[in-house]
Length: 279
Image (tube, rainbow, N blue to C red; front, side, top):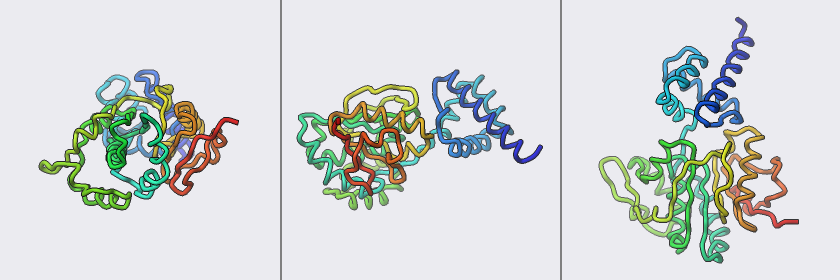
């Protein structure tokens, strides 16, 4: 078989795998970026010690537990607290003053992974005296990631890096005052999570669930194709209140999206946008 034929077959197998996952489990990866999905599935094949994507498809169709295992590879959680500190600094300086003008604030962290961003935002809001009247909705499609996010327990080995990020993000306290240590883990102050809700939500299949003032969805859209990016941005537009705020990841943009005219840059280099006023 030629290299081209092998590639074509793998592409067909990948299409059949994601269709089977959608039909059986309701998780929709059909509009995820092909290159990213292929890379993740190849990694999963090695971990499962399977020769082909077809063999993987058969396994996940007949063994629900193996699908939960596969889900960990398809939704690779990569995050850190106060990631891209200048983004959080821009939030403090440009977004928080406007959020202060609302009697209550609703924030949506879409694709929250294992929760580092949600906990970072809770710390920032507490320092800005906003946490008590804020609600943070942190959503993801991966139940194992949501479970980790809910616990607010992160590796102790990461705290040095997170502390540097926090300080560069304009942090006002000693970062260590927000967590206790136990063995190799940092356990974050449970009171930070009092106004946090962690929930299953898919940007591919679910609809808007609340009106929000600020949405942070960072390093999620890069894994979607154009159609799914547009769907997600449409959800964000519909969820945001009049002149609400949207934050994306450092490699993401709405410039070429179907919704580009519905947002205006607030701090372009930090990928912070504001919902445009209706024409």
